[in-house]
Length: 170
Image: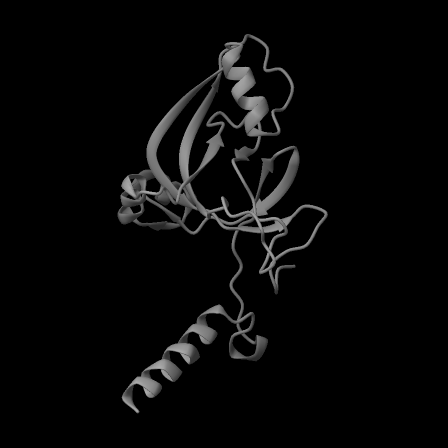
């Protein structure tokens, strides 16, 4: 009987946390929306947590030092996010849910990202890079340099631009 009570309570708690609605739609959280490239298509994402204190403060999100522990996890739960710190273009993500939502079939997608800083080294910025493949080719040609950091960011993808999104995303 105790096991059944614990199991029912666990299911109720999980449904409450994962459900698309809370408080019958009378409560809402609005977060800044960002765009990134994934394999030549744009996605939208939010940032909620960063392992680096200064970045978390600048972004207005939770400082979560424990996210850095994900770097040592094996197998890794981290994907890479390529950020252009000078603001030359939007970030590039290594993967995205396909499609966004419960029907995702991309088993490599994770909302936890290890930050890689991208610096353009060519005198002219060149075309916008829209995939990890293009970025790595640009690095091979000496057009950009990459610096892998120990900063981990929680950035769940909420919608594919021009496509579907998570329940409740508008």
